Amino acid sequence: MQNAAAVEAMPHSWLEDMLAILISTLMISFAVILIRQAGALTGGTVGLAFLIHYLSGWSFGVLFFLINLPFYYLAIRRMGWRFTLKTFTAISLVSVFSDMHQQFIHFEQLNPVYATLFGSLLIGLGLIVLFRHRGSLGGVNILALYLQERYGIRAGKLQMAVDLSIVIASLFVVSWSILLASIGGAIVLNLIIAMNFRPGRYIA
Image (cartoon, rainbow, N blue to C red; front, side, top):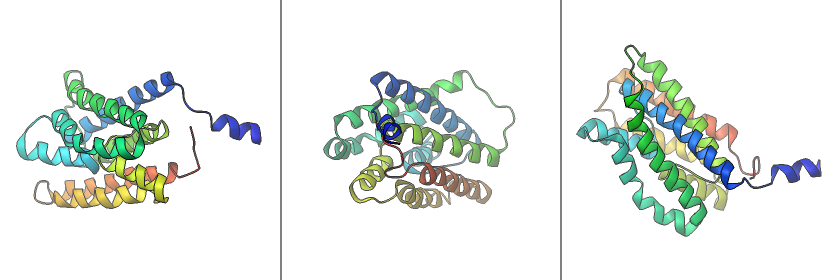
C-alpha cells in the first residue's frame, strides 16, 4: 500500500504535462464548437466569452483570451508561476483551436440539446485533466482551485454556482429551450468535476 501511494504521489514530467494540456485543450475547443453551433452557453469565462460573442459577433477565441487576462495576477500571487504558465498555455491553445476547428469541421445537422450536453461533458473531462496537471482555463477555474487548496471548498460546487449564474444571465440572449439545455450542460459539467476532482483523491 505504501509503494502504491508513493507512485500515485509522483509529480508529472514536463512532457506529460504538455501532452495533457494539448489533449485537454483539443477536447475543450471541440466542445466549444459543438456548443457554439447549438447557440447555447456554458459557465465560467468560456460562458462569458460566448455571451459577448453572441451579442457582438466578435471572435470567441479572441474574447476568451482577453477576458482571462485580469485573472493571471491572482494565479501568479496565489498559485505560482508554474501553474500560471500552464494556464496561460491552455487558454492560448483553446483560443486558437476553437477558431481553427472551424476550418476542418462543418455540421450540417446537429441537435442543440445533444450538442450542449455532450459538449459540456467534454469540457468537464478536459478540465479534470488540466486540474490534475496543475493547470486550469483561468477565471473561475483559478479562483475555484485556489479556494479548494486553501480552504477545502470543493471546486465543483463553487463553479456550479457561478456557472448557473452566468447561464441564467443569458435569458434575453437565447431561447428558453436553449437556456434549459445550457443549464443542464452546466450541471453535467460541474458534477463531473465534483465527483472526480476532490482534495486528496489525486496528487501529482
